[in-house]
Length: 122
Length: 111
Figure 1 (cartoon, rainbow over the protein chains, first blue to last red):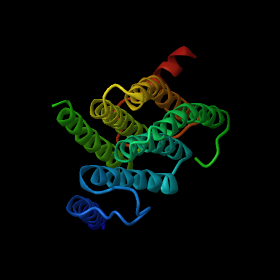
Figure 2: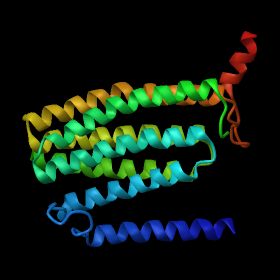
Figure 3: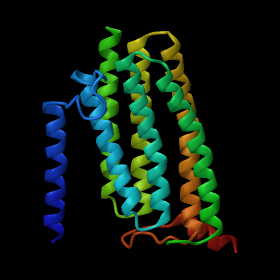
């Protein structure tokens, strides 16, 4: 049972990765973004990683799992902002990433203090 | 030349990010997930940002990318340390196959 779950997950992940590397789909989110070539593939790989982080946020057994996943989702989104900066040549995407990093730090520290004081969902 | 180096760094960072996310999904414990994912994703995103700096050159974008690297390197290990400490204090159990728990030993020795 465990082996079959592992195999199905590996096949799905490798299939999505092969689809991204074979042909990126530029029409999915916003048709004017030039998401083809190397940076389109980079963008979709980062979106795949963010979806894995969101899976851990939704399915994490304890609350500390959710806090870890939210923290790492913020860092992945900074990477997405960097790739979008190169493709669109607009520098304000990195402003979004900078503000996200600073606010994510303060938010994570507040969550940690709350988790330390009170035992919920564990 | 610098653009080629930048593209290589971005590809390396993408590989690190993807493996970090797979570790975040696959590993069995909070502490193992933190251990695997934080280092991988921090290094991968810093590599992507430095590749952006090398591709775009010294401009507003490049300086903002360097500032992002500075902020991430400064704040993300602190956040990971705080998460691990608060998770241990909140009483979240370790994986049953864990060999050693030195923080609990230190707490026991202190009391």
